[in-house]
Image 1 (tube, helix red, strand yellow):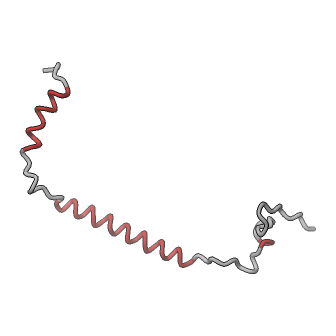
Image 2: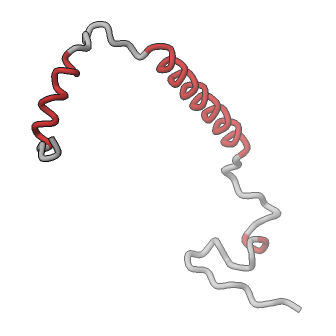
Image 3: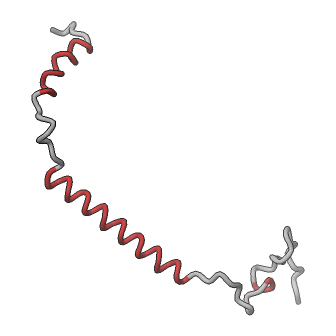
Length: 86
């Protein structure tokens, strides 16, 4: 049977798939465990994201204005770096 084509091999496998009763197939315990682990992971990621978003400040600190941000003038689009002092 080495000269059997792929389509002929698939036609021999089709009856094996029909033996399974489609009304009795369930994900089982393994499916529940995988789903539960994924749900816990998403819950943990959302909790972490909320914690990190709470730390974000949306206002600029007055002491870290344009002078303290690396020397570039951020208030003007395309601002040039300030000349070195001293």
